[in-house]
Length: 290
Ligand SMILES: Cc1cc2nc3c(=O)[nH]c(=O)nc-3n(C[C@H](O)[C@H](O)[C@H](O)COP(=O)(O)OP(=O)(O)OC[C@H]3O[C@@H](n4cnc5c(N)ncnc54)[C@H](O)[C@@H]3O)c2cc1C
Image 1 (cartoon, rainbow, N blue to C red):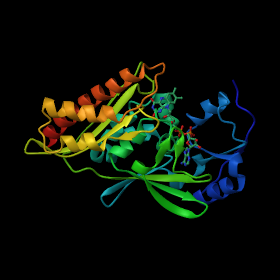
Image 2 (cartoon, rainbow, N blue to C red):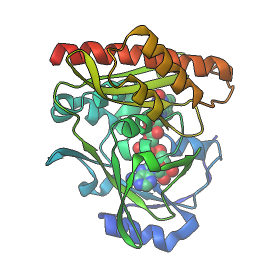
Image 3 (cartoon, rainbow, N blue to C red):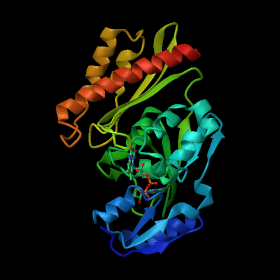
Protein backbone atom coordinates (compact mmCIF):
# COMPACT_ATOMS: atom_id res chain seq x y z
CA UNK A 1 0.00 0.00 0.00
CA UNK A 2 1.02 3.61 -0.36
CA UNK A 3 0.52 6.13 2.45
CA UNK A 4 -2.13 8.84 2.47
CA UNK A 5 -0.99 12.25 1.20
CA UNK A 6 0.99 14.34 3.71
CA UNK A 7 2.76 17.70 3.94
CA UNK A 8 6.54 17.66 4.41
CA UNK A 9 8.59 20.09 6.55
CA UNK A 10 12.34 20.13 7.07
CA UNK A 11 13.31 22.43 9.96
CA UNK A 12 16.95 23.40 10.56
CA UNK A 13 16.83 23.65 14.37
CA UNK A 14 15.12 22.03 17.36
CA UNK A 15 13.33 25.30 18.11
CA UNK A 16 11.95 25.44 14.57
CA UNK A 17 10.85 21.78 14.78
CA UNK A 18 9.13 22.33 18.13
CA UNK A 19 7.44 25.49 16.80
CA UNK A 20 6.18 23.65 13.72
CA UNK A 21 4.89 20.70 15.78
CA UNK A 22 3.14 23.09 18.20
CA UNK A 23 1.47 24.89 15.29
CA UNK A 24 0.43 21.66 13.54
CA UNK A 25 -0.93 20.02 16.72
CA UNK A 26 -2.54 16.64 16.02
CA UNK A 27 -1.83 17.14 12.29
CA UNK A 28 1.95 16.96 12.75
CA UNK A 29 4.35 14.11 13.54
CA UNK A 30 8.13 13.99 13.91
CA UNK A 31 9.94 11.91 11.30
CA UNK A 32 13.38 10.44 12.12
CA UNK A 33 14.68 7.46 10.11
CA UNK A 34 11.14 6.56 9.07
CA UNK A 35 11.69 2.83 9.52
CA UNK A 36 8.84 2.43 11.99
CA UNK A 37 6.64 5.37 10.99
CA UNK A 38 6.66 4.95 7.19
CA UNK A 39 5.67 1.23 7.35
CA UNK A 40 2.82 2.25 9.71
CA UNK A 41 1.76 4.93 7.21
CA UNK A 42 1.88 2.45 4.34
CA UNK A 43 -0.41 0.13 6.31
CA UNK A 44 -2.62 3.19 7.08
CA UNK A 45 -2.16 2.50 10.79
CA UNK A 46 -0.88 6.09 10.97
CA UNK A 47 -1.95 8.93 8.69
CA UNK A 48 -0.26 12.13 9.87
CA UNK A 49 -1.26 15.10 7.74
CA UNK A 50 2.25 16.56 8.09
CA UNK A 51 5.69 15.11 8.71
CA UNK A 52 8.32 17.24 10.43
CA UNK A 53 11.59 15.67 9.27
CA UNK A 54 14.36 15.99 11.89
CA UNK A 55 17.10 14.91 9.45
CA UNK A 56 18.29 18.48 8.72
CA UNK A 57 18.97 19.35 12.38
CA UNK A 58 22.73 19.04 12.92
CA UNK A 59 22.50 19.51 16.72
CA UNK A 60 20.58 16.21 17.00
CA UNK A 61 23.50 14.13 15.74
CA UNK A 62 26.61 12.66 17.33
CA UNK A 63 28.04 10.92 20.39
CA UNK A 64 29.96 12.87 23.04
CA UNK A 65 31.33 12.44 26.56
CA UNK A 66 30.01 14.82 29.24
CA UNK A 67 31.72 14.16 32.56
CA UNK A 68 30.82 10.60 33.57
CA UNK A 69 27.96 10.48 31.07
CA UNK A 70 27.75 9.79 27.37
CA UNK A 71 25.25 11.95 25.48
CA UNK A 72 23.93 10.61 22.18
CA UNK A 73 21.98 12.86 19.80
CA UNK A 74 18.53 11.52 18.94
CA UNK A 75 19.25 11.43 15.19
CA UNK A 76 22.36 9.28 15.60
CA UNK A 77 21.74 6.15 13.54
CA UNK A 78 21.97 2.58 14.78
CA UNK A 79 24.83 2.11 12.29
CA UNK A 80 26.70 5.03 13.88
CA UNK A 81 26.14 3.59 17.37
CA UNK A 82 27.68 0.29 16.29
CA UNK A 83 30.66 2.11 14.74
CA UNK A 84 31.39 4.54 17.58
CA UNK A 85 34.80 3.96 19.19
CA UNK A 86 33.73 5.94 22.27
CA UNK A 87 30.67 3.75 22.82
CA UNK A 88 32.57 0.54 22.11
CA UNK A 89 35.10 1.54 24.78
CA UNK A 90 32.67 2.86 27.40
CA UNK A 91 29.23 1.25 26.86
CA UNK A 92 29.82 -1.77 24.63
CA UNK A 93 26.32 -3.20 25.15
CA UNK A 94 25.11 -0.50 22.75
CA UNK A 95 27.19 -1.89 19.91
CA UNK A 96 26.09 -5.43 20.77
CA UNK A 97 22.42 -4.36 20.76
CA UNK A 98 22.65 -2.19 17.63
CA UNK A 99 24.04 -5.07 15.62
CA UNK A 100 21.01 -7.19 16.57
CA UNK A 101 18.51 -4.63 15.27
CA UNK A 102 17.03 -5.48 11.87
CA UNK A 103 19.60 -5.50 9.06
CA UNK A 104 22.22 -3.05 7.73
CA UNK A 105 19.74 -1.19 5.49
CA UNK A 106 17.49 -0.39 8.45
CA UNK A 107 20.44 0.45 10.73
CA UNK A 108 21.85 2.96 8.20
CA UNK A 109 18.79 5.21 8.65
CA UNK A 110 17.00 4.04 11.82
CA UNK A 111 17.89 6.33 14.71
CA UNK A 112 18.36 5.90 18.45
CA UNK A 113 15.80 8.63 19.13
CA UNK A 114 13.21 6.98 16.88
CA UNK A 115 13.86 3.59 18.43
CA UNK A 116 13.33 4.79 22.00
CA UNK A 117 10.53 7.32 21.24
CA UNK A 118 8.46 4.90 19.16
CA UNK A 119 6.99 3.04 22.16
CA UNK A 120 6.87 -0.32 20.37
CA UNK A 121 7.65 -3.03 22.97
CA UNK A 122 9.50 -4.86 20.17
CA UNK A 123 12.15 -2.16 19.88
CA UNK A 124 15.45 -3.32 21.35
CA UNK A 125 16.95 -0.09 22.71
CA UNK A 126 14.30 0.84 25.33
CA UNK A 127 15.03 -2.14 27.64
CA UNK A 128 18.76 -1.49 27.25
CA UNK A 129 18.20 2.15 28.20
CA UNK A 130 16.25 1.06 31.30
CA UNK A 131 19.05 -1.36 32.16
CA UNK A 132 21.63 1.45 31.82
CA UNK A 133 19.47 3.97 33.74
CA UNK A 134 19.48 6.39 30.79
CA UNK A 135 17.71 9.75 30.79
CA UNK A 136 15.93 11.24 27.77
CA UNK A 137 16.30 14.95 26.97
CA UNK A 138 13.03 16.32 25.62
CA UNK A 139 12.17 19.77 24.24
CA UNK A 140 8.55 20.85 23.89
CA UNK A 141 6.52 24.01 23.70
CA UNK A 142 7.13 24.66 27.42
CA UNK A 143 10.90 24.23 27.21
CA UNK A 144 13.28 21.41 28.07
CA UNK A 145 12.85 18.55 30.52
CA UNK A 146 14.52 15.24 31.33
CA UNK A 147 12.71 11.93 31.74
CA UNK A 148 14.22 8.72 33.13
CA UNK A 149 13.95 5.82 30.68
CA UNK A 150 12.63 3.76 33.60
CA UNK A 151 9.62 6.13 33.83
CA UNK A 152 9.10 6.82 30.13
CA UNK A 153 7.11 3.80 28.89
CA UNK A 154 3.41 3.71 29.81
CA UNK A 155 1.87 1.19 27.40
CA UNK A 156 2.26 -0.06 23.84
CA UNK A 157 2.96 3.11 21.81
CA UNK A 158 2.23 5.26 24.88
CA UNK A 159 5.18 7.15 26.37
CA UNK A 160 5.77 10.22 28.52
CA UNK A 161 6.17 12.29 25.32
CA UNK A 162 3.46 14.89 24.85
CA UNK A 163 2.17 16.18 21.52
CA UNK A 164 4.79 18.37 19.93
CA UNK A 165 7.71 17.09 22.02
CA UNK A 166 11.04 16.37 20.35
CA UNK A 167 13.36 13.89 22.05
CA UNK A 168 16.72 15.54 21.47
CA UNK A 169 19.26 13.28 23.18
CA UNK A 170 19.84 10.25 25.37
CA UNK A 171 22.14 10.62 28.39
CA UNK A 172 23.73 7.45 29.80
CA UNK A 173 25.90 7.20 32.92
CA UNK A 174 29.03 5.26 31.96
CA UNK A 175 29.02 1.87 33.74
CA UNK A 176 32.03 1.12 35.95
CA UNK A 177 35.25 0.10 34.21
CA UNK A 178 35.50 -3.69 34.02
CA UNK A 179 31.74 -4.19 34.02
CA UNK A 180 30.24 -7.21 32.30
CA UNK A 181 27.37 -6.96 29.86
CA UNK A 182 25.24 -8.98 27.50
CA UNK A 183 22.24 -8.49 25.20
CA UNK A 184 20.72 -11.83 24.27
CA UNK A 185 17.88 -11.85 21.75
CA UNK A 186 15.82 -14.73 20.44
CA UNK A 187 14.41 -14.03 16.99
CA UNK A 188 12.90 -16.19 14.28
CA UNK A 189 15.29 -14.98 11.59
CA UNK A 190 17.80 -12.21 10.84
CA UNK A 191 16.03 -8.84 10.81
CA UNK A 192 13.19 -9.95 13.08
CA UNK A 193 11.97 -8.32 16.26
CA UNK A 194 12.60 -10.24 19.49
CA UNK A 195 10.50 -13.19 20.57
CA UNK A 196 12.13 -12.23 23.89
CA UNK A 197 15.41 -10.52 24.77
CA UNK A 198 17.36 -9.63 27.89
CA UNK A 199 19.94 -6.95 28.67
CA UNK A 200 22.35 -7.31 31.60
CA UNK A 201 24.98 -4.96 33.00
CA UNK A 202 26.82 -6.05 36.15
CA UNK A 203 29.98 -5.58 38.15
CA UNK A 204 31.78 -8.35 40.06
CA UNK A 205 34.07 -8.06 43.07
CA UNK A 206 36.02 -11.00 44.53
CA UNK A 207 33.87 -13.41 42.51
CA UNK A 208 30.54 -11.98 43.73
CA UNK A 209 28.03 -9.72 41.98
CA UNK A 210 28.49 -6.20 43.30
CA UNK A 211 25.81 -4.50 41.18
CA UNK A 212 23.39 -5.72 38.55
CA UNK A 213 20.74 -4.26 36.26
CA UNK A 214 18.40 -6.15 33.93
CA UNK A 215 16.09 -5.05 31.09
CA UNK A 216 13.65 -7.24 29.13
CA UNK A 217 12.39 -6.66 25.58
CA UNK A 218 9.04 -7.58 24.01
CA UNK A 219 7.55 -9.61 26.84
CA UNK A 220 4.99 -7.03 28.01
CA UNK A 221 3.25 -3.94 26.65
CA UNK A 222 6.31 -1.96 27.67
CA UNK A 223 9.99 -2.76 28.06
CA UNK A 224 10.67 -4.01 31.59
CA UNK A 225 13.28 -3.20 34.21
CA UNK A 226 13.61 -6.40 36.29
CA UNK A 227 14.61 -4.77 39.58
CA UNK A 228 13.74 -7.68 41.90
CA UNK A 229 15.57 -10.23 39.77
CA UNK A 230 18.71 -8.08 39.83
CA UNK A 231 18.48 -7.66 43.63
CA UNK A 232 18.41 -11.44 44.08
CA UNK A 233 21.72 -11.72 42.22
CA UNK A 234 23.65 -9.07 44.16
CA UNK A 235 26.09 -10.74 46.57
CA UNK A 236 25.92 -14.09 44.79
CA UNK A 237 28.55 -15.81 42.69
CA UNK A 238 25.89 -16.34 40.00
CA UNK A 239 25.55 -19.96 41.10
CA UNK A 240 22.89 -22.03 39.38
CA UNK A 241 20.37 -21.93 42.26
CA UNK A 242 20.49 -18.13 42.60
CA UNK A 243 20.30 -17.59 38.84
CA UNK A 244 17.24 -19.86 38.77
CA UNK A 245 15.54 -17.76 41.46
CA UNK A 246 16.37 -14.53 39.61
CA UNK A 247 15.11 -15.97 36.33
CA UNK A 248 11.86 -16.90 38.11
CA UNK A 249 11.51 -13.35 39.44
CA UNK A 250 12.10 -11.92 35.96
CA UNK A 251 9.62 -14.29 34.33
CA UNK A 252 7.02 -13.34 36.94
CA UNK A 253 6.86 -9.70 35.76
CA UNK A 254 6.36 -10.59 32.08
CA UNK A 255 2.96 -10.56 30.38
CA UNK A 256 3.63 -11.14 26.69
CA UNK A 257 0.94 -11.51 24.05
CA UNK A 258 0.49 -14.79 22.23
CA UNK A 259 1.32 -14.01 18.62
CA UNK A 260 3.17 -15.24 15.55
CA UNK A 261 6.33 -15.47 17.68
CA UNK A 262 4.73 -18.04 19.96
CA UNK A 263 2.27 -18.51 22.80
CA UNK A 264 2.63 -16.29 25.87
CA UNK A 265 3.98 -19.08 28.12
CA UNK A 266 6.73 -19.87 25.60
CA UNK A 267 7.76 -16.21 25.28
CA UNK A 268 7.92 -15.88 29.08
CA UNK A 269 10.14 -18.97 29.26
CA UNK A 270 12.34 -17.59 26.49
CA UNK A 271 12.75 -14.34 28.43
CA UNK A 272 14.14 -16.47 31.26
CA UNK A 273 16.44 -18.37 28.91
CA UNK A 274 17.72 -15.11 27.38
CA UNK A 275 18.32 -13.70 30.86
CA UNK A 276 20.32 -16.77 31.97
CA UNK A 277 22.44 -16.51 28.81
CA UNK A 278 22.97 -12.76 29.21
CA UNK A 279 24.05 -13.27 32.84
CA UNK A 280 26.48 -15.94 31.81
CA UNK A 281 27.98 -13.77 29.09
CA UNK A 282 28.14 -10.73 31.37
CA UNK A 283 29.91 -12.77 34.07
CA UNK A 284 32.52 -14.07 31.62
CA UNK A 285 33.19 -10.55 30.34
CA UNK A 286 33.39 -9.03 33.82
CA UNK A 287 35.82 -11.71 34.84
CA UNK A 288 37.89 -11.20 31.71
CA UNK A 289 38.20 -7.44 32.20
CA UNK A 290 38.28 -7.20 36.04
C1 LIG B 1 12.35 -4.68 8.43
C2 LIG B 1 12.52 -3.98 9.75
C3 LIG B 1 13.00 -4.68 10.83
C4 LIG B 1 13.17 -4.05 12.06
N1 LIG B 1 13.66 -4.75 13.12
C5 LIG B 1 13.86 -4.14 14.29
C6 LIG B 1 14.43 -4.83 15.39
O1 LIG B 1 14.77 -6.00 15.32
N2 LIG B 1 14.60 -4.14 16.54
C7 LIG B 1 14.27 -2.83 16.69
O2 LIG B 1 14.48 -2.26 17.74
N3 LIG B 1 13.74 -2.15 15.65
C8 LIG B 1 13.53 -2.76 14.47
N4 LIG B 1 13.01 -2.06 13.42
C9 LIG B 1 12.62 -0.65 13.63
C10 LIG B 1 13.79 0.28 13.40
O3 LIG B 1 14.80 0.11 14.38
C11 LIG B 1 13.33 1.75 13.41
O4 LIG B 1 14.31 2.47 12.77
C12 LIG B 1 13.07 2.35 14.77
O5 LIG B 1 12.09 1.64 15.48
C13 LIG B 1 12.51 3.77 14.68
O6 LIG B 1 13.52 4.65 14.42
P1 LIG B 1 13.38 5.68 13.22
O7 LIG B 1 14.53 6.60 13.31
O8 LIG B 1 13.23 4.91 11.95
O9 LIG B 1 12.04 6.47 13.63
P2 LIG B 1 10.72 6.82 12.82
O10 LIG B 1 10.16 5.62 12.17
O11 LIG B 1 10.97 8.01 11.96
O12 LIG B 1 9.79 7.27 14.05
C14 LIG B 1 9.22 6.34 14.92
C15 LIG B 1 8.29 7.07 15.90
O13 LIG B 1 9.04 7.85 16.83
C16 LIG B 1 8.72 9.24 16.70
N5 LIG B 1 10.01 9.94 16.77
C17 LIG B 1 11.13 9.62 16.07
N6 LIG B 1 12.15 10.41 16.46
C18 LIG B 1 11.65 11.25 17.41
C19 LIG B 1 12.22 12.28 18.19
N7 LIG B 1 13.53 12.61 18.09
N8 LIG B 1 11.43 12.95 19.06
C20 LIG B 1 10.12 12.61 19.18
N9 LIG B 1 9.52 11.62 18.47
C21 LIG B 1 10.28 10.95 17.59
C22 LIG B 1 8.02 9.40 15.34
O14 LIG B 1 7.12 10.48 15.35
C23 LIG B 1 7.32 8.05 15.23
O15 LIG B 1 6.14 8.07 15.98
C24 LIG B 1 12.83 -2.67 12.19
C25 LIG B 1 12.34 -1.96 11.08
C26 LIG B 1 12.18 -2.61 9.87
C27 LIG B 1 11.66 -1.81 8.71
